[in-house]
Length: 586
Image (cartoon, rainbow, N blue to C red):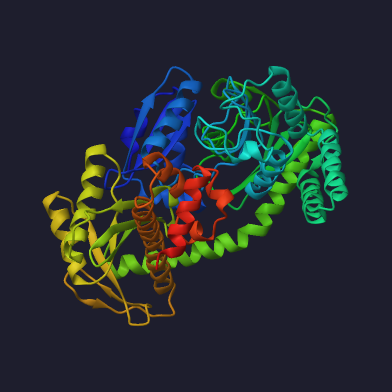
């Protein structure tokens, strides 16, 4: 098929892009020798996902680079740009929680989730913590033990925390730097693993509560201490340099790659990350691309340990950190332990994944047959929600190869005045696909609207005005809110076996978009309701209103909150007035 074109590819490093018959890039790769690599897809023996991908290739392009490093960087950038269906990627945009100890302008502790973590000039970062609940518990305990700044914003007057002894009054008082530095040193030592001083401080507080006959507070603090000990009882290693390092290994079998990353912080394993993904290319090259994309969103430690067959120099250049393969000793044992975990995770997950893949493939093949389509790899599903024309919203979820692609989910806040279902659908479809055209981003193969012929016609009308030829179908629910009918653009009912894989997939899609949209609608409605009530209370301006909405979310939470909780955001007299207003409101 590409015999003549293959002959022209030079024996040079670079990146290649495989395209389907619609011109969409479905895979991006890199190679030291472009000629040999690209040729291998069409002349060598391919199996599994690679065979499926090759069957879809209608054309290819390539870009020559000066070095393998440049080819790697280009590959990563093209993957980010085109999000090809056959490149292995992080399953979602998950980031791990970190504890941030802020030094200036005031000492403060908070939970942070950054795309890329690094110590800043005026703060230290500890983590990652695999469990957000555990991280919050640690922050809560330290805030109880130390008079750190706890209120939001930059208040000009002393707040309730100062009066109950949980803050030094940084907004009005000049605090000795030595006191602050000693407090920060103790907290940092604790977060690095030195628990003794904090435990002694807690036991001292427990004794004081007991001596004051405040047994409830003493018991509460004792239970807090027990839970923190459990949280911090992580696996200790014999590495005593307390360096922040990650250990990476993998297990490959049956076309699937199990990637395992252990986070080692201050001599302790504080968490791990695992992914099980199908691979197209050489498993080592795929995992190297995965690692770079992983550290684009997470902290890069001062050292990374990897297996011997990784291209260490390449990764060093990209990530700008120490990367090496240990030959012996404890670090070599850690590499082996991570490999064992990767294998166990593979064995635990592979049967479920293969079964799910088969069901999704069967469902999508049936849908292609019913709709007379050659390719259905990206589906976008829409749902609208409104109450008497108020708080009009729409939600869109994306499924790639039958699997939810949560990075692609979108929320739309529509015009507030009353709109029919027809007009709402027209607005959201126009906004979505006009933007994709402007940004030159890939379009879906299929659009599903949650509704009947009215919603289908609205979508088709807009797509036609944009010169887009995308198939649109509708899903209707019966009076029991169960998926009942599939409609084509002519309004014809397409019967589907309710016991089939396709029916279950469509039901899942419809439920997913409905729940996503309803959740957004409740959020908007709740914020609208709480905002209008807060406008009625003297002393609550825009800044305080935003903080109260962010903290309490809805009216019920605000009604049930203690005055002391509300007084953390507004002055106590205003908190009292707000509570009285809520109690008297019908």
